[in-house]
Image 1 (cartoon, rainbow, N blue to C red):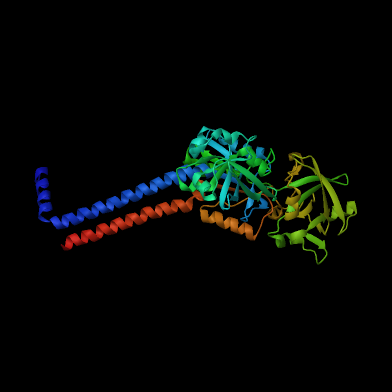
Image 2: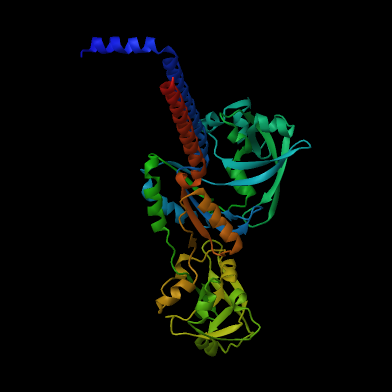
Length: 453
């Protein structure tokens, strides 16, 4: 049977069964139209939200340091106490990184003219790409850098300005916590209004980076969380895993001076404290809560300095940036153990990390003082590397666990775009699957009707 004959039979059957063929063609057309519209919608939503918004705000990889200070929403204010430390880690990936930036932002209730609304104020560096991204429609972009004329210049969306009942060069105000947990109140001058491509940007407002760093009380050697945008997004997970490996913490001990004698200060974790007390012999007063408030001195050190329970000790240590610091502690237990090479003064984690908020100088840090490796799990580390989360839900669970069982050391979390936006990406996939099922079901119904007719 040649092609001409097949074509003739096909057209003949179409003309014989007009009603069935019209229904079938209509079903196919509607199904394909639904798939095309849904695919275009999800693709456009992906481009706007993921590529322009999420990548711009969260990058491909984010390295967050979650400190002991809690903000209004229970999460620790994020910043690194020594920028050279984290910059040294990412320097290895210079050829893989398109650009990166440090977070200097605060989630606030911005007060306008008898109205207020929640806004994320973001410290940003000015530049052509930045202003093109915002799509400024009112105001002079150069005013954004004129910090001598305008108090804390701010750019917000025109819709947000209308809601707050403010206009160009009006002032708005906000209160928020800085890095030290203190409430900071500031006024901002609106120098430009923008009309971004998507409504998701309506909640963001932008302030010069140095102004925001000053308001948040960043020191020159401190930086916020690092957001990294790669040349190739496919390398996000492999590179993030390598960074995790490079950021594994070591046991932390700090050499200090006590009565002209070199002593080592270390922390013990609250979690697993019962197991720790089974590994060493402790002499303390019955009413003392060592898990939360303990300061344990070794018997050897107590004998040499003639210390007893209840005595106060004063030691000093060299900080990394602010000179020498003196600290007073009250001894409330004496311990004996053969598990340490250099028997340290053991301090509960909350007190220890509060003392060493001013980072010790690198030259006084020691990590090789444990003889019994079983003790490693009970002794404090430089920081805590939080477990790798695979979804947005797992990230939320980690934060919830930290609220219930706080860790007083600095905590580092490393996430990629896949984890931080997994809920949204799953939502887009669900829309595509539902539309495919619906189109297939519609086609099946029409095909059965065609058979019946």
